[in-house]
Length: 251
Image (cartoon, rainbow, N blue to C red; front, side, top):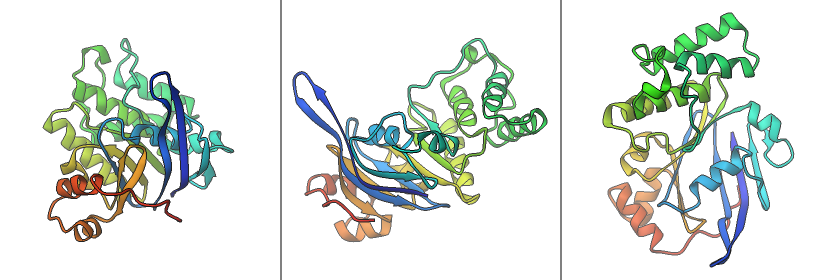
């Protein structure tokens, strides 16, 4: 599971001074559950996910991922997560299969098992037609599917996905959303960021609305619609960010 309590991260900007990118955020994501972080660009979604993946170190607060503290046990956290970042590139001169085999070997996966895992991911993500092509020849959607396969090649229990469908067409987005749903059905803990409300409506069991580094609302979709008296998630979001943020939540 993922358990976050009063997580904070700030940085210094020459013009704005101290900026609280993540300001006392708290939430819980259980195994077999998809938790969506919704918010506009600059809301703090990516910083939150980077804290959970140990790319960044929190200033204060606590985050436990797969039973390990992100600040005190970062190597154990990294061994148990798959992290998809929006700015992680692929090796242009390698094929998708070569990339997956390379990263699988870094995780110490035995060769025979690794080959079976690569083939399994190729089937799940519908990559058969391009997995043996060099990645510099692939479309954006094809590259993203290779990136997701690389993220999960070691079959981690926790997935942390930063806007996994950003910039993709409908077909590629659909394939990735189907993969996320399948991962949930196997009991994985999944947290992902998005500003696409239709994706959140389709995928998420729990939703946290982040704005200006704070958690402004969270709960199930039914809870949020009832709380803000709205019929759709987009209206919930607009109404939530125009009200006061939640106080720090004890979890």
